[in-house]
Image 1: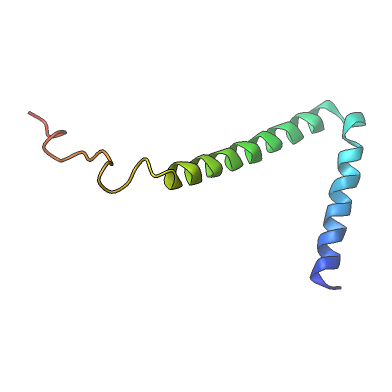
Image 2: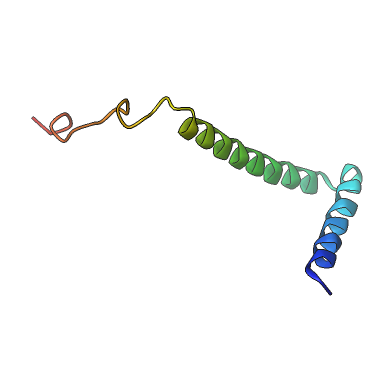
Length: 74
């Protein structure tokens, strides 16, 4: 079995389970929503990090630098 056939099998299995989700137990629906929110949050954080890192607003000359003197106990 090739890798593409395995991936298609997995996707077919996921699709079948997603189609049965509206009739599933409420606990199963809640678990699915929690996992979905986790992945969406992860993707949003990655996109935000990439945009923030590439926007040019924080070049080497404009980054805020905190020196040890600023935070030293007095």
